[in-house]
Length: 147
Image (cartoon, rainbow, N blue to C red; front, side):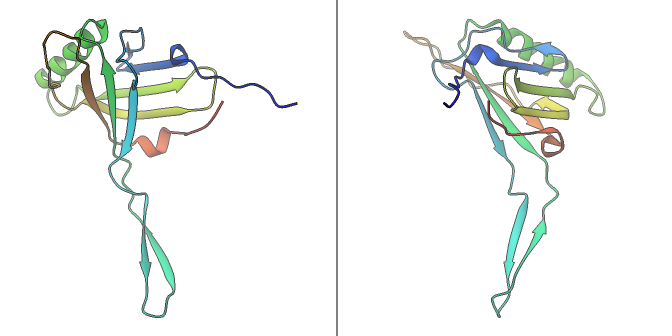
């Protein structure tokens, strides 16, 4: 008999520069999105149909974290960005980690930073705030696994 597997967003541990970002206050549905800057390989097809590939060596990835405006993580991300803007020569960049504590998924980078202040919409209803974090070398430390 196969084992029942389940996902719980509370099993996702996220941090940047050792600052915890996974203590709740998430958006309604999507919490984290990972996108790679480009494919890890670029194919080449010769006139005779022979296929080769070239490694891009590009480990740059982008994480989007989505929070409600009431989340404490918004304050922490703002503080991280302000500290990075005040630092010199990239000193504000640091380690990012997002991992499933009960699974095998790990997204990590030794050099990550908050890319910019998020766009903010305020109105009658609660709108989410999306923070973009850039990861310079994510492919080296990441493993997209299951549970």
